[in-house]
Amino acid sequence: ALQSLSRDEPIGALLRGTGVGPRAGLAIADSIRSGTARSLGNIDLYGVELQDEGAVPILSNLNYHAPCCTHSLDLGGNGLGRPAAAALAPLLRLAEAGDGNDDSHGQAMPVSELRLARNALDGAACQVLLAPPASVMSFCPLGVTTLALSFNPLGEAGGAALGTALGSG
Image (tube, rainbow, N blue to C red; front, side, top):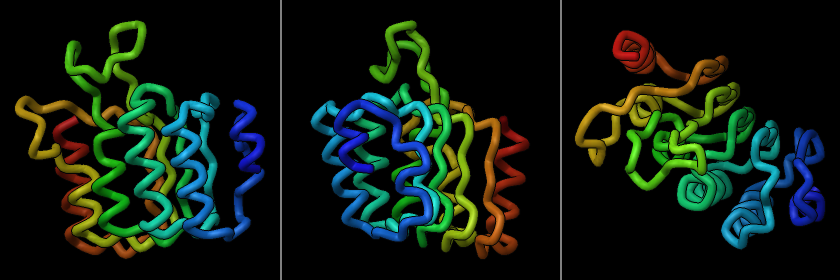
């Protein structure tokens, strides 16, 4: 699967459900950073068991090296918590024109389909994921149109964060 990524082919379902763990995340992050991973439109890493240790490097590299490339992202079943939510949050926001995160068409495109089912996202992680980042001086709305959070321990705080995000978008 990782060889497919280096050949500029989409990962597709090759890693889905393999449970290979955080090391796969580190290899994918290296591929994104080095520019060898260009097929990033749809990333399906469900059940890879990345944990925060493997997911944060992927998300950080997507944000820095390819902020406008990923349309659909499935990180379900990976044991993700607050660190991954914080790394993922900037990828969900519509950026203002001229902020340096624009693609060649002049408009930033956030992740629009996000699947995070079966993780460890609690209310605090949901707040970090959906609240506007402190670094954003003017509010940049969420660009995500599909959000799957089933089987996460969101609790009341997570519900409140979702309500606030939906009310402001």
